[in-house]
Image (cartoon, each protein chain N blue to C red):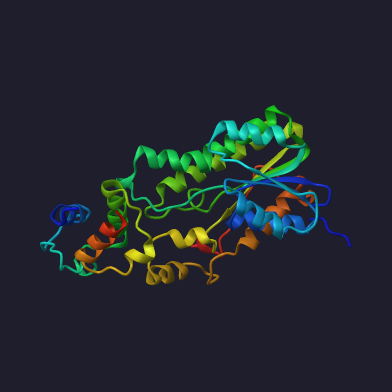
Length: 248
Length: 75
């Protein structure tokens, strides 16, 4: 069957693959034929993701990508990649007057420094094949809108967006593409760690013209488009997934 | 843990308070209590007491005493 979104023959690194959106991306990519290399901090959770992948030549590398040496260790073990998905990230509500240097560092290290430094090492060690595709899981926050107590997250995601476009320009001559998927609220376990009441959640949901939050699979499908040859002429672009949130 | 100091730390998170907080005060009913103040209280507890309050447990507390007991139980 003709399928321009197929990922057969592609080898794709997925960070943050031990849970949430990263795990779902890995699973969905494997269903379209990709070989997946998972990375994350927690080995048993990586094994759980691995066990859910469709058949293929998959493996995992346990590493903490907030540590530069760990990034180098990952990259040294990699075969040549045709795709990379930066999905590792943290979220959390921090009012501006509660911001500390430690909090800034925590958000920046995971959401910004890690994808930048991993990209650098992939390029330096020539692990990204020609025609390969790099996808950053960014956010609607910081790029299209901001919200109360979300400044640190928004700052890192708008920074990531600027990096994505810069990389797209700089690497276009090598035909390596860089794009991002920018979702609003997605139902994951990370969301349950945000201290909001049921009433607040309902009020928040009411802002979405399509009356629900997104699903991890929907982020995965946009990512798959960007990883596939269907998007071969697309670089430096954000795909907004927000159920219509930012229309008004 | 000193409850008077704890009350002061909670009070400091409000912009302005028109009532005096006591252990029996239902902080959720105090004028000026918002989701933002709730976040500031969570951050204060983290910074002053080294405790990360699980949201679902904090949601069950209503009085300052209950919140104090929750923090104390985690120490």
